[in-house]
Image 1 (tube, rainbow, N blue to C red):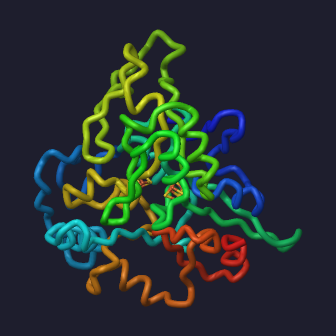
Image 2: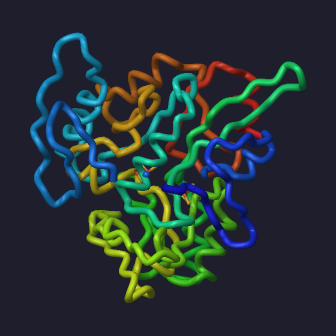
Length: 315
Ligand code: SF4
Ligand code: SF4
C-alpha cells in the first residue's frame, strides 16, 4: 500500500524513508487496521465489541503491550475528563521499518494520499560526519491546537478538543477544501490530509473490496463508498486520532502494537502507575517535544540521546 501524502499543490508527496534535510523535516513536521494479534488471540477489529480478555504472555516475554493495555483499561474506569492520553516515542529504538505506517493505514482503511503517520528520515551534520534518524510523526493532539480555530472559523464545530486530550474531527462538519486548507496551514506539523475520494485500484478494473471496508475513526462506522463519493470522510480533512476506537475497546493504538522495536508507548499521563509515566521519568532530561516553541503543547513526547537532534526538532 502506498503511504505517500498528497496535500495538493503545496505539499508534494514525501516517499516513506526518503532522505530529508533537517529543514525539510521541520517543514514537514508531523507528518496505518491492522488487526493486531495480542496474547495469541485472533485479530480484533473495531470497537463495538467488548474489550477482549488477554491471555498472559509466558514469563520472560515482552509484556509492555499488556501493561499498556492494563493502563488503558484502568483509565477507562475513570470519567473521560480525568484521562490524559499521551504518546511517548523512543527515537533511539525506531529502526525506520515503516510497520507503524502500514498498520495505521490498514487500521483506518486509509485511501491514496492520506497517511495519518509517517516516518521520514532526518539528516544532520556536515559531510563526512553526517547521521540520519528515522522520526515517526503524526498529529500531536496539541493542547493548544491552531488547527481548531482555523478550521472552525470556516466550518464551525468541525474540530474539537476532547476532555481526554484528543483533538477530534467531525467528518460531517469538516467539509470542503477551504476549511481543510485553513487548518492545514495553521498546523505546524502538517498532520492533516485531504480525502479526495480516490481508491488505490480506481484506474484498474480489479476493484478490491478491502477499499470499502468499514473504518472506526472516532468510534463511528465509516465506509468510503466508491459510488457515492461525496459522503464523509471523503471530501474533508483527516488525521491521527490516537486510535480512539481502540482505546475505547481497551487496546493500544495500532501503531503501538505493531512497532517491532517497541519504540512507541501510550497511556494516561494522569496515572502515576502508567508505563508512559515510568518511561518519561526514567529518561528525564532526554525528553523533548517537536516544535514546542510554537506553544502548541503537543501530546507526543520523544526520547532522544542526541543533543543535535533535540536542537533540530526545537528550531
Ligand atoms: Fe491540530 Fe496539527 Fe496539533 Fe494535530 S498536530 S492538533 S492537526 S495543530
Ligand atoms: Fe494511526 Fe492510530 Fe497510530 Fe494515530 S495512533 S498514527 S491513528 S495507528
